[in-house]
Structure formats: C-alpha cells, structure tokens
Length: 243
Image 1 (cartoon, rainbow, N blue to C red):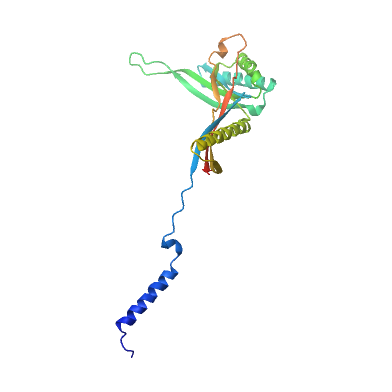
Image 2: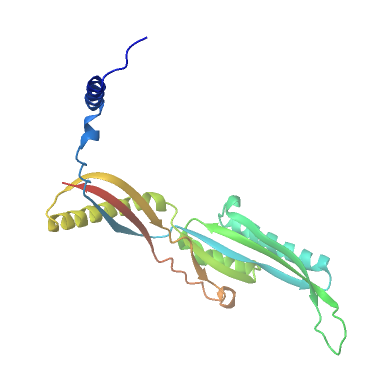
C-alpha cells in the first residue's frame, strides 16, 4: 500500500495537468478573431423584347335548335362537317382543328300561372378551336367558317411560337442592366464589383392574348384582324461580392 501524497505533490500534479490541457487546446478556441463578413450587393433588373405573334387560335362553333334532340344533332353535325371539310380544303391541317366542347340541352318553357315547365325543344352546341399558323390568313379563315355555317364566335388568341428563344435577348439585356447598376452602386460606396455569387430569373409571360370577335358573323366585309405585338419580359436577381 502506498503512502498518502503530500499537499505539495498534489499541487504539482494538478499544475502539470493544466499545462498539458492548454497545450492540447486548438488555437482558434484560445481567442481567434472572427472573419469579417464579405460585403455583397444584390441588384434586380429587367430586359424586354418586342415580338410579333406568328400563330393564332380561333374559337368558334355551331349552335342549332329543333323540336327533337335527333333533329338538332343532325343539323348541327352537318354544319360542323362542312366547316371542318372547308378548313382542310383551305389548307388547315387536321391536327390544327380540335373539338373543345359538345353539348345537348333541352329548352324549357317559362313558368306561367303556376304551371310546371315543359320541354319546347333541344339545343346542340359544337365548339371548335382552329390553329392558324399564318396570322395573315386569320381574316380569311374567319370569313370562311362563318360562310360555311359557324354562328358562335368566341375569341382569337395570338401567340409567339418561338418566345423562349426570343427571351434570350431579354436575358442579355437584363444582365447588362443589372451589372451597370451594380457598378454604379459599388462605385458610390467606394468599392468594386467582384465575382458573381448567385443569379436567379423571373419570367413574365404575357400568355395568349385574346381578342373578342363577337361581331365576326355580322358583317359581309372581310374581317379586319391586327395581331399587334407582345412584350417578352425577363427579370434577373444577381448578387455580386464587393472588393
């Protein structure tokens, strides 16, 4: 059995342990200074490009009424078939003619003197969407379908088929605008624009532009149609480091 240690020997052993612990402690835990946060600048900018629509989608159709559903359907089907055949003869591809609605509905009498409603006849509706890939022919196509029996006018939607490729120019404009503004702000703050840290994009899609054509079937003159232009807009959010 060993003898109890003296107080002086215990103090010496404790001191050695403290020195060893200090030697093993990482330098950064002994008071390393924090790194300064990198200065940054974030700028949002917009680029725009005007594009002329090259595609039109026409909504039209036929509504017929008769005493029986069979009679109304027969009349309707005959007119719609004439329209479809006429469109194909005019050079519209079958894939660009689409039925978007079909319905058979009874027509009821009005309430009178407490008498219940009764069926007076039937109404059949067949609606078509026609894609015209030459916007210069839209007026001609409208005249043709009305002449062949269309009596329901919906709208015309103009589209830019190559919008995504055309937006690349808007993207270049947006980045150039963002960099110009970033340099202006950095110079005013006594700094210089450094490397890009992040880029994000925000698209503004105008979508198809509908044009009402409720009076298309009410005029004997050719239907005047102007596709106009669409603005393709891109917004970028860019962050740079500052030097």
